[in-house]
Length: 99
Image (tube, rainbow, N blue to C red):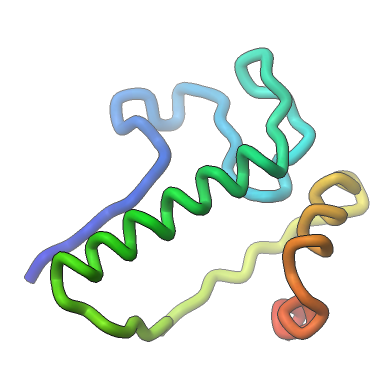
């Protein structure tokens, strides 16, 4: 059995460096640079590409989500993250997220 781990974190500095973790961090500053929606989307696209490459290499045609983590964020304190989330995801997905 093979186990794959795709992460943006450097294992050598994980937990020691202040890094963004998710969409709610948009608008915050990390290492002197404001974290933007564009950067978030760039990194997320890299995750998707990595998964697609693994699937191609393994001959996998479909995936099944068996668990989806629901993270709770208070967007009242991060209006830029709420705007980004609302802009990225259609109403149907936003409604599903609430369930």
